[in-house]
Length: 374
Image (cartoon, rainbow, N blue to C red; front, top):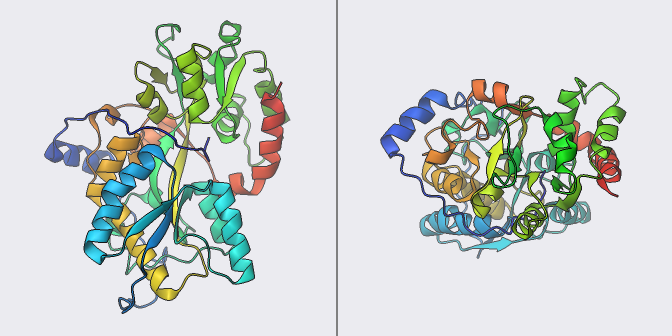
């Protein structure tokens, strides 16, 4: 699971669904728009600062993520405000450590806006290194689904969701129509399996398969089960390692983002009966910024959640938007790997607790790493 390096090229998967028909589908199927009463700061509306920063620095991933934000939210934000946007590609954990260091030293953080993952954005809130978001600046929040800001989330917005099902090469793998996560433990995949180098994508599905609750149960059986994959694993890492393994013929099946499969082309994916972990990408504003920068940073986040920019982002990276008025790419409609309704999330998704993952991150990551390394 993420964090990862996102060095993907721009996805070229076209979609033809019309704005009118897509809007009808999304209105009917998306999660109920969120009510932000008490979810963001309840202060009175702030006046637009007289001063503007000479630029905003936004931390994001590279590839399709950066190019999508450059062409979409950054371009429209600059057109409206006159403020240029620059991008920083520092890794998620590294940038968070730098922000923490800056806040403690009472110096300005190295970036003005952070695109991260839900568990790290939650950790930033708990660490008090991010600021509460202001509903008066985020004027687009009334268009967002409830997954955008779950209860207790004050300092960040989830701006898209993604899942990591089982992805495979149909020329080399004959996959049944319905499977359990037990499928990847079959010896027939020995020496051909890819797994991510972070715990969540396997820990939660295997726990569910074994009928264990990560919040209350001893997860030793989970890590022992994952360790039984050692002889099957041929590659581990992030998306680029999966792509390299598939292209070299060293990998035929693995756990990765559907967006990665779309980039490679010719691959298929399947969501097992236990579901696939649902992850979120999230924006937050670091603490310790000048007031005018903090204001315009939130204006930028508001721009990223407009229906138009969410539509473009979904098509570019293969992630599900949180704006209920966004136009969904045709390839997402009806696919269990892109759940966006309450019914679909319950049936196909494993929605984990960011608090639980953040609190156990170091312990679970160490156990997972020991389990998959040979």
